[in-house]
Length: 176
Image (cartoon, rainbow, N blue to C red; front, side):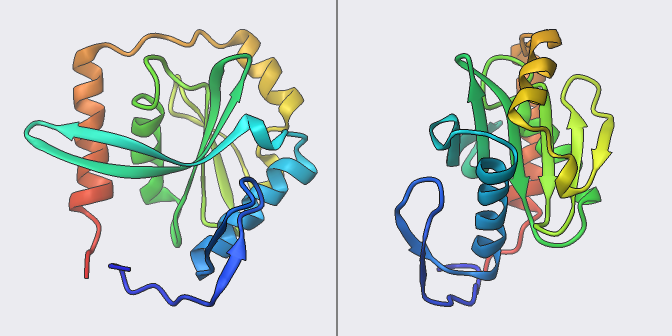
């Protein structure tokens, strides 16, 4: 397991239907998955879970998971990064991830610890709103995406963002 997680048996992933290990973190992810489908109007096939993103930072390479990627009309419109604890330390690496998952800027970035959330404008990096209830619904994301530029990310910016992700998500994390 690697990080010393307490495994509490198994559960069925709400989006994929696959059996996965039940940890405290995974229970929060499942809460977020149910919120997206049951309350926010997304179809399960519009949400990709545990997307593996290869991060290249100079000569260093690693894979991180993007907890949720919402794709509408063929474009990634929102990503959600889950992590326990403080949301403040998760903002910048999540913003960096939103610039690496595709060749363009994802319009909405959400960081959540399962109890709270911050919704961030991908283009400006500014917090739009707070709270799980304020995670945009499908209709809201369609409206936001209609006005989004989906600005291309230059190779130079992608390199800088990869270094940020690597520093926060890989070098900065503890591995036991």
